[in-house]
Image 1 (cartoon, rainbow, N blue to C red):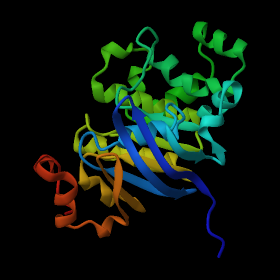
Image 2 (cartoon, one colour):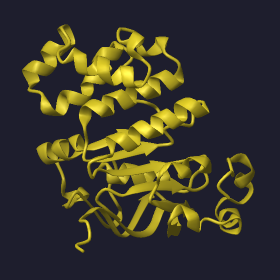
Image 3 (cartoon, rainbow, N blue to C red):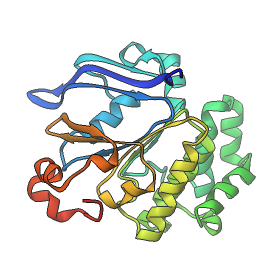
Length: 258
């Protein structure tokens, strides 16, 4: 049986800002189509790892290859095209406050539109039916013409996911996407991310609650102090292992899986 091609490869990767080391000697491979959960205490390096996969930051040592391209070699149009293929759900949602929800969702289509069509859509939104359908899937159909500051934090997050649904990226990244949601909506959001990552797309999600691991992640990568300290299936996590990873912070996270 032929192994799936890898979408993400880190080889001896480090990242430093001044004297602060955010990542240290990371080596890992994520095959295409794998569903990966990133866990670890605050400041472990999870967000930096996701930002590096997306080409927002570059390694200061080692090599990162994503979608068969070395990320620090990408510039200009090649970098723009690369980022179009990476869907990133940030903690801050990254909605444009001056634009209606419809426009924010349709920004997921900008990578496939001409400049003329993009400008015209600001005046008269095109493909509005796709934005409406994506919002309906996330129980936000009635918020199509709202402004972001009229939404709750959880609603803003779901608008950002609707934007990803229109983008249809090759790799889906999410940085603690359910931290602001209740259990029902949190489950719905993660299920939407799993659905979006169907058809062979790779999914990498950083999580605070360990309860969500039961939804179908293939692999858990645990980080601490900028390094990978555990890599295996969700079933490989034990309470002693989690105690060594989280320390005092373990009391603050959900432990139904431990």
